[in-house]
Length: 123
Image (tube, rainbow, N blue to C red; front, side, top):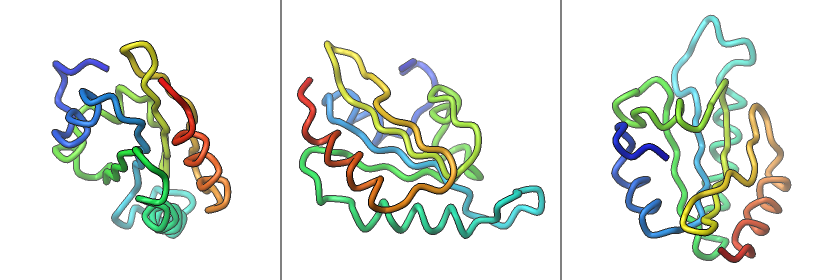
């Protein structure tokens, strides 16, 4: 992660602590050029919010892609293409490894399993 680029403070703090992270990028406003509509984004966001805190040690972040000041260059650094996009990051040897990337709709049960697996991994 290039910390000289602007990233949200809460994300940077968790990054420095070496916490596993679940990061969601979503579309929060209507967009006529958005092929699937924001219902999918809302659904995945609610799934992740319902699972937040259920798995020990994971830091959770949600960023609206329409608010560039909110997430800075983080989406670009993580290679976000379209929303919703859930990225699971795990510390490994003093760095972070991207463990999973889910773009588009992802069922709640799959997110739950992925978060369980992330919480069970050791650095």
